[in-house]
Image 1 (cartoon, rainbow, N blue to C red):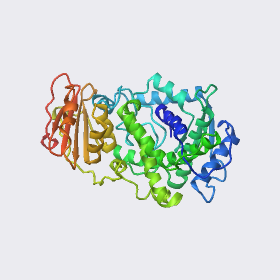
Image 2 (cartoon, helix red, strand yellow; image 1 turned 90 degrees about the vertical axis):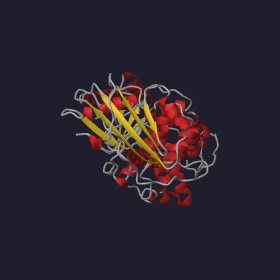
Image 3 (cartoon, helix red, strand yellow; image 1 turned 45 degrees about the vertical axis):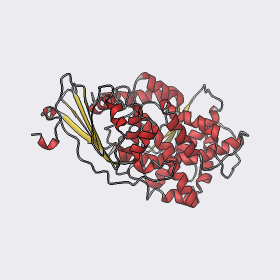
Length: 428
């Protein structure tokens, strides 16, 4: 599963903060070499406490050049572009989730890191532009593809930074955990219907890989003579760092995807405290189905997780023509948190509001040539959001905001003329 530039920055942060765990002798190596790949693999097996080797040795690993990786990304971009304009891309731009309506570069297979929704609705981060491809080519060391069951390593002739070889080893360790997970869970066969469910599943899968990545990072710290720190505090430190440096995480859509790594690792660290590696495995069975379950505050309170049912958003009847399109999704608490932060809402207000999430319903409609897109999003909460949230959302005049006691309704369109929203039940 691919990790882009913000995740690479987090890897550097890990080297600076560190963790503690049982040590295993190993040395810095080049992950394009099979002996190095084997060393990292067996080290991850040791950290996870596996009593057997499910692969009977190193899982399939392919090494490709930067040029080959670029060609692959460009093919994916061209394939995505063939489908034409996507109403969801435009909707995300209208809501300021993305910076561009360009088609996304998606990761291969279910559970990949390229999009926010398993059904394709929420798409990827801001576009598949040349600059985005340049960023991936420059900063991705390795990824796991659950469709081909292969770990791919990208060979970088020129590497920068203080510890490029070690950062590459850490990334490979993370991706090898995904290969082990796939043997246990089959990452391509999950029942995921909404963006909220996708991100929740991502939190468990990526959180597992991130937690053991953290432990591996600590071993590298010790190898480099940097010393070890508390083994289980890194996820909390990374979450808090992300909250306080939100402006460095990129677009709100990408920020939500990124946050599921440390939020998921925090969940796994809590499981680990209760029963070690076995508890991490059992944690899959009771993992939150909605992202609100990952928003544990400083007080340790775990938000109650409702069914997520919510009153449907209104519809624009005038767009419901023979050739129009309409699609709905549920974004969930973490995407709501990053959405609010993107509109200038403070962390405390955004976090407490997201923690009280009980459901949301987002409807996107477009006419036949996608020249007009209309978005309606109803968000419901167990507590009354501060009035300053609705004020922040409405301040620019781009969004129409209707706030009630326990809900916020947002509508926006790129129509040159006003559109009249009404309950969908009233549409012919």
